[in-house]
Image 1 (cartoon, one colour):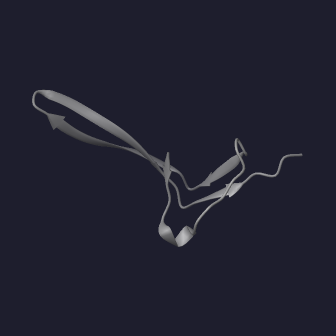
Image 2: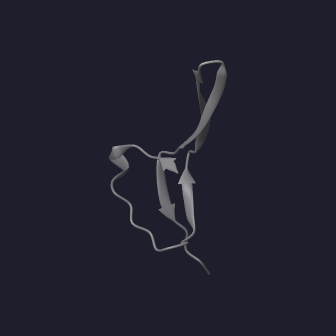
Length: 54
């Protein structure tokens, strides 16, 4: 899953259509439950655009 800002607008792509992420960043969110540490990795981008296949 990729998070994009609401300003990028709603996106619609065909199934398995190739896309490109604009300015992607990956970061981790850490938290603990009892004695266990967990990390969720989050992928954010400024926008998602379709790639034209040749």
